[in-house]
Amino acid sequence: MDTRIIGGLEVGAIGLGCMGMTFAYTTGQRDDAESIKVVHRAIDLGVTLIDTSDVYGPYTNEELVGRALKGRRDEVVLATKVGLVIPPEGRDGMYRDGRPEHIRQGVRESLRRLQTDYIDLYQLHRVDEKVPLEETWGAMASLVEEGLVRAIGLSDVRPAEIEKAHAIHPVATVQNELSLWTRDDEVVEWTAAHDVGFIPYSPLGRGFLTGRYTSSTEFGADDFRSRLPRFADGALAANLAIVERVRAVADRHGATPGQIALAWVLAQGDQVVPIPGTKRLTYLEENAGAAAVRLTPEDVRELNEIPPPVGTRY
Image (cartoon, rainbow, N blue to C red):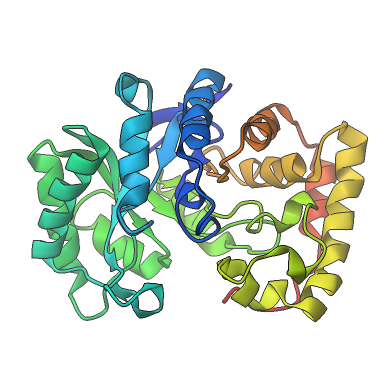
């Protein structure tokens, strides 16, 4: 697989998001043995950016990734996050915590769960508006100085926040949502201009752009997509027109709609490395194959003209 450089880190052009292996999509449906096989096969395919977070589970995702990487840690760029907390009463009470003491405690616990003595990319999951960004980012920068992490990044931010952090310590990467139905031209352009990596999460529109979902009844009550406006019955039916537009391009390339959706994300710039998530080997192979798809300028223009989806993100 072709590689790209993000924040000074060389990774495969397609990464792997691990959230769904233990969190959000999989309540009561975990298959850790299969997930570990997915991580191992990803590495074999050149999918070397492995992304997790302490809040996924919480904690169970990092523990799983740590087990999966045993003996193969040096073959990957390991990325995790800090700054969101799920209280004992459950996910609906999730809150932000950007206090320096939380950052310092969080990295120690993540290192233990991941069974490693360093993290390649440590990301602030959300900016905590109750804590000055200078304090939060300063704490994260100190972890680089201590050798606990190699680089630091931000997630779900706008250019003004990136610039504020960048003035204190280099921002290696920004992880925002980006796909054919969630555009973010402003931040993509900012990262390209400032040599900052862009890591799109949900590059397949939470699976919708693959064409595998045609009804809201396909999501269990514990699947958080069942609560998202774009996946409600009326909106989902209208949004199927987007998939058909993507499928038309896919048919010309002998590819799947999901591969075209990922190829469009890759076409947004050399600093872009999407992290589609999966817990199945079949979908991993399909996603990795997107790195070999070469869209023409006409393809990109056609995909750019796809109208926005019906329904908000959340």
